[in-house]
Length: 428
Image (cartoon, rainbow, N blue to C red; front, side, top):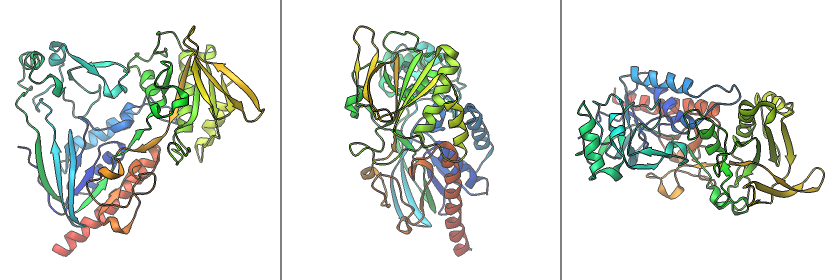
């Protein structure tokens, strides 16, 4: 049975992405007891799935490695993975959290040697790579996963593969008797850092994501370009593996739209500008990027990055809301149809590959929150007094890039610390 030592001076952090990790570490490093609950088998969230950050174009493994090292060194931080908060009751300074723990079927003896994966034959869609390839039924979510411990897919439990995994482990780490658990513990304040999810591109019917193989999303493109990703970092088309040298990017795919997300997702413009550099990285002057946009929102320090991309002769900008995409059956090329709103010229432009810059929406639906808090029309948590000692961090509060999410999470940590300090003061 998992035991969590917590009091009403403990801070509960829900979500272990870049915001949750930041908030948990900032609070723990002031001496507070922190419990971080993450539903995935690892921490790092969607930031771990990026190839590069903008605007510096450095790899997220750098920042994540620093956070992981900080987490390992802090005895005040307890991280629960494969865990989900199902209920929160009480009030500021005196909450009780109920957490469901799913079995990992691998205990702390794991050395991440990979023998269990070698022994298992069953394969399943790889969630880390947005299902673009497959992984084994015994797997390490990604190279730098923290905790650095394998997971057994529950679909192999009770099969010969599970027995093979257990037999292959020299360290007694595979435990097929693990069961789902439910635990309860106290907390004085809660930081809600459940992050964001990509808008479902299947809902944008005119763009044909559900029927045209060479129309992909911006998050899928990110994984494709990573050397650890489904194509080993090669920029190729899903349909036939052909080199994709002519890439179209469609902005506001599902954002700022009465039929989809009403809000601007704020990261999409910069994500596309960044991704044009991936095309350059792959093909140099042989590559071509075309950005179809309504307007480009590159504010503050990002303006310089936008100017740099504009100056690249291999990148073109077309001011247009693409009306529809059809597939050229002979070539497999997606063909974009619309009107250039600067010259009012109709176009029917073929490209090797189309990338939809899809919007951000909250990871938790408004009707699935296990606690009563104020949520706005877009599903993000409002900073309202009625929320008591529950504070949103990062993209649970709004559509934010990594930098702003980290800053916001630090603020959330400070607010939570103030709540538990008041508790300590009253009890002292």
